[in-house]
Length: 291
Ligand code: PDD
Image (cartoon, rainbow, N blue to C red):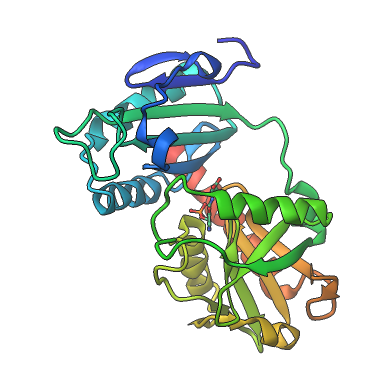
């Protein structure tokens, strides 16, 4: 596989990603009837792999999709090893498969289409923001009511991300109808107030982020109090710090929201401490796995 080609595994067959072809009758194309995962690859190690695969299994069950996850996992390891990629992302998508267009699930059930690909990290769009603090905008959360499912229905997220890009910002934070901040278009959201970390509880209006889960654990290790409570948009000015987390973002400090600084407008001490703890955790995971 040449350096610039991305290796895919399409239903068990390896090929360059751009050579994968799928029918227009695939239900992901017609209805967005599919779930996905994105996993970060560090030094050849899929980070937080077990957590991601467990979330995928939960999402498949929520969608009533029957998939052999052990087989999917072994395909993933094989393609990862054949790709030779050490630093990058793994993308997994499972669709309900191909069938004549009917809203209800087709009978008999079609064979799910399973896509895996391993992409080398060539650029990191969050690199500057991770160091200096991100600029974000707030936009109405226009998504459906089952954001706990990691489905490929991401149109509202894409529109909000585009609005952020056009405003010269790194991410958009979504605001629910009751005025509470839910999460970013591809990140979970945390505030810091009086030394405690605040984040929205895991209800159906947010994705149970894998990085979010790690941050909750790291806060425990660093003895930083954590409160699961949504942050009202009107309370942004009371926060000392704000940060976002995600597989591709890691921990992203936010210093400016809608043009107004958070706290003193600098990356704050609690966020810094968590970033340090995150890197220590990552290094210890990598060295444990290489021993
Ligand atoms: N997005 N919230 C939303 C809406 C997301 O799409 C994501 C991840 C997260 C963070 O979750 P995690 O820590 O498990 O990556 C929160 C992925 C990276 C994406 O769509 O590319």
